[in-house]
Image (cartoon, rainbow, N blue to C red):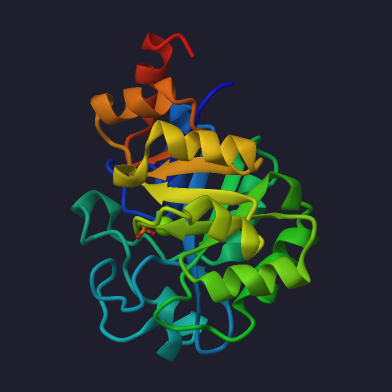
Length: 244
Ligand code: G3P
Ligand code: MG
């Protein structure tokens, strides 16, 4: 079994996170998949951005939920990273799915609905994936267990992952109980027994955010299903050396 190399927010070490240049670069470098974060604008358009507030990754101020999509599109989401990316726009989920559809990439859409529990975010994202016929290569993930439960009640044809950074002896059992079919864990939670428990319960296990060779090696040795990395090129190179 091979550990998938998943570009975290795209190839986010080399290009501004969650933008088309970062996604295109991840594809060009040969990543197996892409992870991205989704939130809703004031007019209910799903957009790809990590923080609830725009200020870290765009040249504006305010919460994503208080901008219309047209207003968000006026912001520059590239110049904070490097002058070279001036003029880069915040991407809608629709634009991203259109781009990814003909490319054979695994897809992880992380719903950012812990601090703000956007109404109907799950259904809006699911319906769009369904219309692009992308459900069979997508995982929907969230740190919000209530949202995992909602998705498990509503959808039966897409993989659902619980994200967590908290130590908990019953983690796999708890994830399974609320209906997750995958667990996305912070690297420090990774142990052989956790991976074993996931195997026994038949749930996938992927690890974030793995940027160092030594940490990558542990994930490869334990044969986790995937790693999320800001440096997919390094991940691919290390995996090759590991003969995986
Ligand atoms: O989905 C894995 C990882 O992205 C979770 O944390 O904060 O980088 O979205 P964060
Ligand atoms: Mg994320």
